[in-house]
Figure 1 (cartoon, helix red, strand yellow):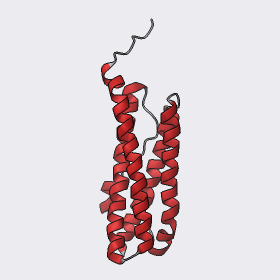
Figure 2: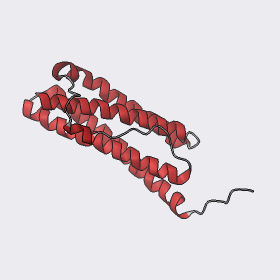
Figure 3: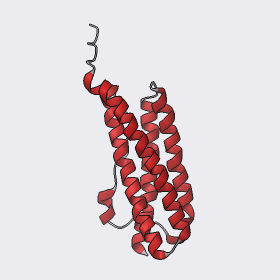
Figure 4: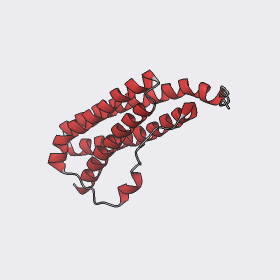
Length: 159
């Protein structure tokens, strides 16, 4: 099952990247209370997905040496951008990362069905449901941030 192990590794790495990015954006926008607290909550979800994946990793392994999925890897967000537009861009980037995570879990769920591996299917379905929750929050927060970022003219800097 070399290809399943490739996707198990992708799920593990992608969840880790998403969790680290959520924490970086939360810290970078700590002055916005809901962003700071919710990114921490969402990062814990990704941490939990990795913990739930551990028995699967033990059973199927993680294949990090296959070249093809490297094109799927997304770089994490090391630091937050400044201002309202920065928040908007950061939320979009988090959305892209979470979408990669969701599609990875979708592929794994299909593999689990083919293998008739109930444990893997349960793990992947639970992770997909929580990843959907993460994506919904990004979409809701994007909608809230967009008018402020795109329409309101910033005050000029004092000289």
